[in-house]
Length: 326
Ligand code: 5GP
Ligand code: MN
Ligand code: MN
Image (cartoon, rainbow, N blue to C red; front, top):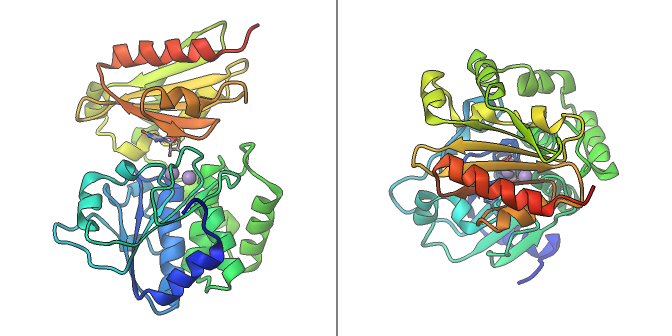
């Protein structure tokens, strides 16, 4: 159906016994946080829950309580009553092996905040007014009166904090701060969890910053900034996929920049593009959709064919075409 209410979803959560909770490839804090948040709430209701992600748990999120429950897709079919896709804009972004292992399950719930989500579930709750899927789950859990164990409480905070750039981006709403206040009253250790989320980087991430700065280019009268990461640097610094998480904010923050772009060579030769816009007149999601990607108006991405130089030129030309006059 087009849009399912929390009550309709709640009925499925009540009736089913077993669940597989999924999130997107190269999971971020909102993806893993959403899996933990809903997973532990369902477990506290006495349900059987599996938390599956194509790429498994990234090191930078291993501090999260309950994150040891994240597993990579097994080779054998996962027999559950209901599959729940979280924070995942399109079905293919769940990953091939993940889709294969839950292929036998006929009941799908899709909970997400990407406006480009085509509602690929049987029940769909897509709320692009929420800055994070974690905030939708907070609303679901509190409005339905479901349990909110400590793991879920902390996971919701990390999910929303990471997807809002520490409660800074314009998608952050009064509801977001009220949610954070409520989670804090429920015992969340704000200083502790922020230190683990933000002040805990491996040295190789700082070396990556050094390398990225050497590739920085600015064009379009200083309104576009972009940098790139090639395989030789990935191998030299022994980088993990999550090491670049959030670094685009450094060039997004440059005075006068409207669009920031990060181009990365993937092991399979494809190019991952991260795009950020600081101006509503440039819709990053719209630009990315021209190349098969998607996301949000101010934060979007693509996986596209290489080589990196060609991808960089094509996407930059598409961005230049969208720049406002003057
Ligand atoms: P990031 O740049 O942090 O990887 O992603 C920014 C946003 O764009 C996220 O909300 C993410 O879901 C979305 N996004 C990133 N890469 C892709 C992609 O290849 N396809 C689609 N549909 N969305 C993407
Ligand atoms: Mn995400
Ligand atoms: Mn998200």
